[in-house]
Image (cartoon, rainbow, N blue to C red; front, side, top):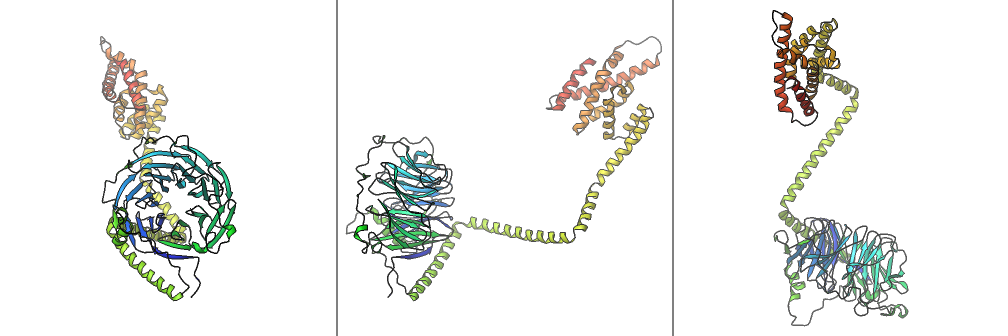
Length: 634
């Protein structure tokens, strides 16, 4: 039989139908753990058993943080949307849904004795929640980046928060204010832990160091050497004799006055999420993709508490003379306050949809043993579970265990997939449509690549075809422009011969508004060309152009009307208002008829303008100016 190991992997199993995002142990018994994943579920497990005890649903986004209550009677879970949900495990139902964070929740902790929960999120805020009163008591602001971890002090009066900005902030819970900033880390702080007895805080950062802080003096006590891997989880010995720190490749055991690394146990457990103690054994849990793994370290074989440790390295309890949290800590400025006012915000709601917030018990026996029995009066001595037995280097036994585990994982995956299909039928349909759309996109991309390859081979020919296509597309425009050019050449020939009236008559007979507008632009540019004859023959055309759908036509027409009213208006008014002459005057009669025709047309135009004065913009202003000029005819 081979020699027993100091540390070993107890189990590894499939935990979720999508990637696991968070994992935590119950520190009271170290017999239960809770996990959250991208499948938006919270699963409860018994340590050492591969079957899920209970599945808690209700979150609508990825579950990003989980935490057991101090008595393991509650579980709180935070999601990437910023929402928190609290479940009562004895009653197997949801207690509260708490909202208020604007980004994903990273850190959770229960108050050591009050019914409070603390949460930290990527929005850089820390919130203190009253579970019973369903509200946010206080929001602590100050971090520049997200909050990675937070812990209540053993006496429940302080909160320590670890920030992505590399700063540890110590908050006075009752006063609701910052006590101190601890700033010596050179990178984001991953985790903080309070000493169970002394006023001491440990912190671990991505700078690969662990630091110890005296919270009386708010100064650094000591710091570890820079390790090869950063520490992701820590836990003090229950009696405060040493600190256990989990790095990716090992378990480190530290002392702090002075700093010393008592022992290092090689462990391939990855980024360990949480550690706890159970009968002289340290339990560590980690996750990778869909799987959760549980690791055990025999502390009887690990210094300084192991049987082989040397007397001179065994630490002495409370040798520093540092004050205790429970009795000797000096009161804060607000210690006499009996309560903290609840924030004036609507930051929580009760779970009102039972269908969306479910507690699905999957293993009734384990559930009754671990959770239901907590609410009953004990009539017999408490039965302590046996410590986990270390494995031996028996290859055949390892193979059998691995095969059995593989079959169990396969069966459990099939069961979970069936349940997932039943609960998420719409989601599955959406994914199928997305996959179909992706296949179509891939097919189109492939076809596009084929076309591009052919285009490179026939680039010159396609270029010619494109030019031909462009020419064909302009045929209609060329026809219109050619016709307009021909008409303008005809009008120009008559115009340059000195017969302006004939040129205008010819343009009118062409019935082409574009040609007419071009002529009006010329006449507007040279106001001296306007005569009574031109006014009499152009005014009916101007009336029609006012109804054009093209704004430039209407604008040109308004300019022409303004010139007519300014230059010819007095002539028209004088002729239609003068008394008949004695005798026969043919030229006067003709002038009177032309003026009368102009006047009648202008009155018709005036009626149109009166209806359009309210039009906003440039045209409305021009109509108002014309209406004023029309007054010269009254």
